[in-house]
Image 1 (cartoon, rainbow, N blue to C red):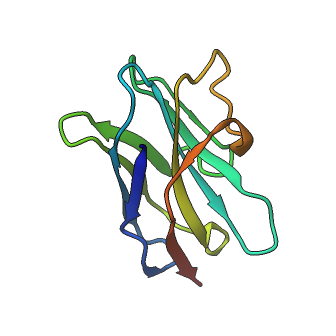
Image 2 (cartoon, rainbow, N blue to C red; image 1 turned 60 degrees about the vertical axis):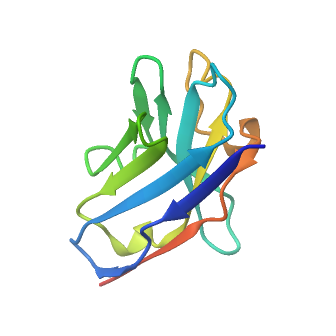
Length: 126
C-alpha cells in the first residue's frame, strides 16, 4: 500500500522560502514518477512540479518556474519541494502524488495520479 506523508507547510511572508517534504513508502519497484500539486478551496487541483525518478528530469508549472525546485532523496525515500520567493498567490494546500510512469510529456494534470498524501498547508501573506 502506497503511503505519502507531506510536511513542512507553514505561514510565511511574501518573499520568504519553505521546503516541503513528502515521505514515501510502499512504492512498487520501478515506479518512476512523483509530483507536487496544490489546491485552493473552491478551485481545481493544479500541478506544480513533476520529477522522473530514473533520470531526474523535471517539469514545472509556468507560475513557479525559476522559484520552486523539486528533488528526491532516494536513500530517504523522500520527495522535496524547495519554494523560494513565495507570493501570496502560492497560498494553497500542497499535495504530493506518485504514479508508475511519467510518460513522455510528464503531465502536470492531477487526474493521472492515483496515489496522494493528505496535504500540508502553505500560507503566504503580503
